[in-house]
Length: 631
Figure 1: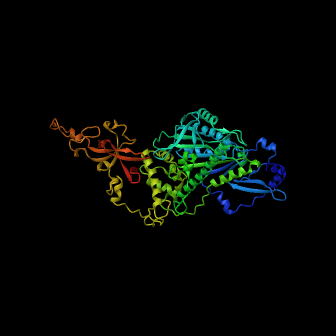
Figure 2: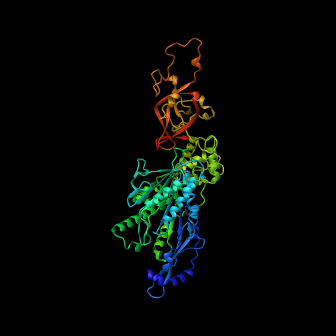
């Protein structure tokens, strides 16, 4: 076949020069601009190598003008007559030509992933393509640019950056930063994938970053193939974990840079033995599963944020348990996960005519990853469904629903709509809330929970729209000015809010009651139990300390109501009258879920009224069996 290509190279060039693509339909043109913003699929065409040019092979892969369409031309051998041109076209989100620098690719594709992970999201880069197409060259260059951005000090706030680099060869995993020590890919009791045995390295400088990248590259498994003497025969995963010390309870940001094993054409495998053939099958299987996982997760995300919650669409399937690669990256693909994700795929293409078959397969694979989301029709505003809110409606809701002091809507959502704010990583949501003066971490967490709960509840609503009389009016939205029907007294029993009408206008110290939750300055006797004290001191009022008998003691064994036993009070001594009023309380303890609380019913102590700072409202969630702070 190669002889046929070389013999007809001049005719091939003439046919390519005369190629005129068919005009794109309006539907195809609209689809090229409406792909999901959470997954970007790009193509990088590498330059022709010297040995390919010397051998006489022409180029077969061309970018069509300034568009995101790639044309691939191959010679067709007819039964009789002259060879003809067989052309195929593929559309992706971005195309980079053979002379585009890695720096340009970084700024366009990968640089946005860094602040996303810095803010607590999950960003992932995959580099895919035929062996010898420039995948490892691309990823190694991007790794250095990522390190430069993270270590430059230009990102807002302080973070701790940790790195580990592992290799997946077949079903086995190795730690490339620990002398290729074998590790295990396991799930913990919460279903989170853990790299058991892998070492994480705290990165503090660009020099140490580059040193670790070079060490990993030197230890990675390579083999000689028909196309490449040092072909990568394994998947290399560089995991960057970004910890925010200011929000210790929030999820860490994650950035994955994945250099996938090179795929091979049939002629590349012609000299392989049985073990190498098995290796090739494992690589191709994992790449096939990866494609299904990326596309499936993108479809699910698009359905979840649609106005109807994806009820009308067939649910996509994500087979992440079918390969070690996708099991390692489970939380990137798991539909049950709640992390905010952004994914970039770079399909590296060899332009040589001799490899036209492999190039077509690579671009076909890339095009299948690209999820085209139909342009949304105008959605009727619903004050109970955040996915229907524009920026003005979202800001109005924030101003009236974020507690006291109100979170600045201009800081939290300068441009975002309701669906876009739902995609914002939780740590970034909290960090923006905390930029408003007076807003505490607890208020920010409670407001984020409230917003997410409203979104979850909106999915459970019936398809029939609520009438305008039932809907509360919000600035910027349509609807009646009639307020939402007030909840009944029984409906308030799932929270600690005072059920009496008008109670909020009375200072809380004047209406202390059983079941009220208060924040307080911890007395010394409580502070000694540091293992039980949450970040914010909260307690549930049980009763006045004087209401219990002399046998009742707190969790430190101190008598709650000592009374006047012992020496009688001297006549005219009003010291007892001057003592502040005290209440027997149960401690509120942090739960295992972020932002959740539990009530330590038997962790009891007394709190003086003077030590109480404010009333706090907790709501009970039957699904998780925890309490969450409300605003």
